[in-house]
Length: 160
Image (tube, rainbow, N blue to C red; front, side, top):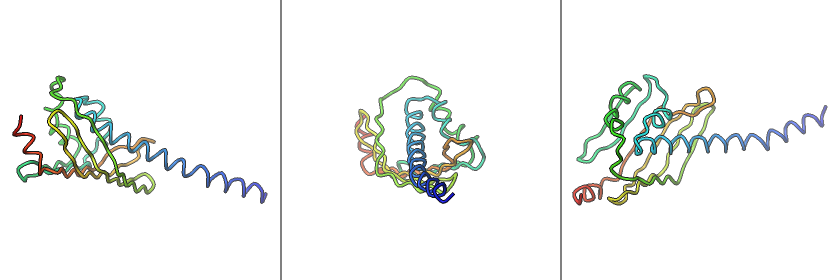
């Protein structure tokens, strides 16, 4: 019996970190897919990254000093509806996410990371944070805070 307990304890020590890594990889994939779906105008891919509940929350700063705050999935979907109406892409955007900090506690995870978007206009950087919830074995976004570095953003837009 003692050997059995030692084997089970050893097995747990070796496999639980793997579960955590698997969750972290899944979380990173959801974050990437949400952004990629947005920029490729793939509404299904973008929407699949989100929980479709009234408690979702989206906040971002905007050029000109204003901000966008959206509460609830229905409102979020309406807010971005125009982004998905046209399938014609105006520019190819390359997404680079780095410097992840992932804190997972059961079926909830808080993530912060740096995002760089590259397109024909140049580079846009931001500090991103997300809260995700694991529902039926899948990680989904429930909260977004996107703080874009707008210092040089206006210069790129004026150069268009």
